[in-house]
Length: 204
Image (tube, rainbow, N blue to C red; front, side):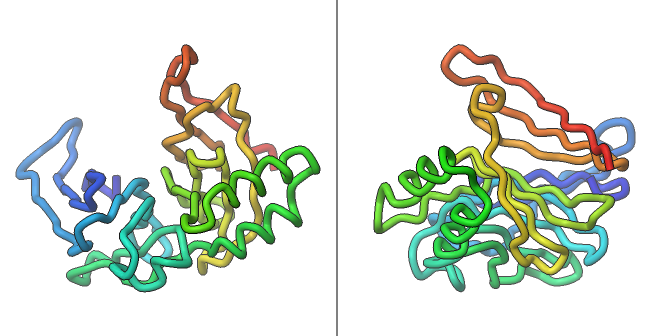
């Protein structure tokens, strides 16, 4: 939601827009960002500082998007422009490996490195949600693959990484903040665990 405009994202990258006044109000407009066929877009956020939508790129075919072979993350869409920025913000496989080595404890480190290297020809990270932190102005991204939470500064530079508790969030797919900076992460139900929303209070 941006002011009184509601944006909805479909997995093929198609975006829909309508006015919201205690419910949908007016025409639903379809917005085509012009992504190539085969792209899988998951995660929609908004950066109020830059005034841009954040569209998470989960998967893509090789050679269809700038930096697609090396970067997983999101693109910005300044809605005053006809199409999103082609430059992907996020991190490379090499940068993720470095983050795991630097910031993970021994147990999680071994598990995540094994996950990262399970297929040499595929970068397994898959962004599933994006949110703008209203207090720190950071961009927070979750990946259901690997059960990861990654934090970037306002310019999109990687800052830190966390492993989500899979017994609480077996399939983390949604992320949001309230205005005081409390974090909400939703998980789909999986293997007998019901769908749920975990709340992490901002104590700073």
